[in-house]
Image (cartoon, rainbow, N blue to C red; front, side, top):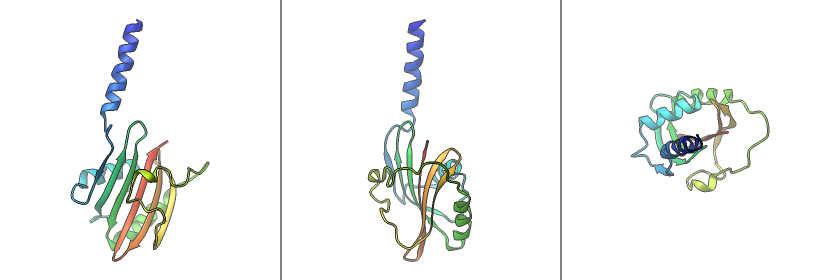
Amino acid sequence: MKTYACAFVLCVVLLGCGRDSTEYELDESSFGANTIKIIEKECGITLPAGSKGLKFHYVPPIDPIVFAKLAIPADGGKAVETWLTGLTFSGTSFPEDFADDRCKWWPSSPRSVIMSKQGFANGYYIETYLVQEKEQLILYLKYFTI
């Protein structure tokens, strides 16, 4: 019986570790529609049509951390602001700059912030910055399970 229990635990560990167990980053050319769909599903957001992935950084394993930088069409800014307003935050604040050192392009002190919000959605802790960078509306999004 003990052997079966050990074998079962080993299988669970191996299966869990095989799923996205490597830290990786995508750029504008590799950040496609499938990755955007994952973000929408996990965060509970419907990104406006025409949104484009610019940067994506994934930190595994058990409770992965996701960083994303998305270009939002100018006419989609209000829809993103509405979603941000719906994020709820309760309880203790998370450590400032949590895991930011794992992602070089994540803004340490974003400028031209239109709206910033931390909160919970779909079981994820989410930190966001909607900013105006030059002529582009950019959504910085970081999320992880808790």
